[in-house]
Image (cartoon, rainbow, N blue to C red; front, side, top):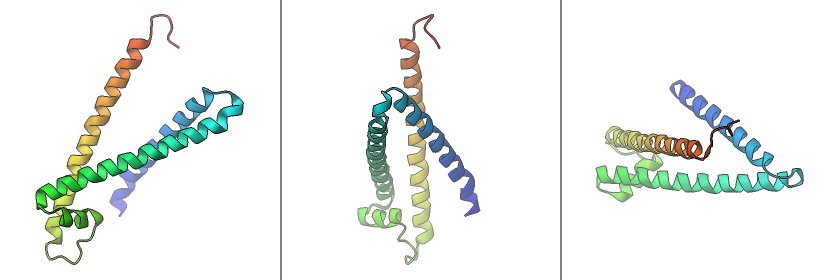
Length: 132
């Protein structure tokens, strides 16, 4: 369990910092009397996006494991962590670990590509002399 402390702390700090900046920027763009409505809308959109992303990631993870095990039912049990009673739990856990690595690599590549696209879009809309 201590091996997870570093990655979980990094994720928590990163998400916390990003949410704080996003909330501040969103609320600063509306009139003061509508700040509560803006914050509520932002939280609603964030919650829906998180649910969609988790469903998509879970689907990709199960698909990757099912491709290796050739059984959707077994893949669902493996991804849910129900492998303790099976004699080949180590092999199943290794398949899950491999699938996690592939899925996380895909997320990292997608994140880098979106950051690059965002940087290009922001840069192309800034005209000389209007930078802050």
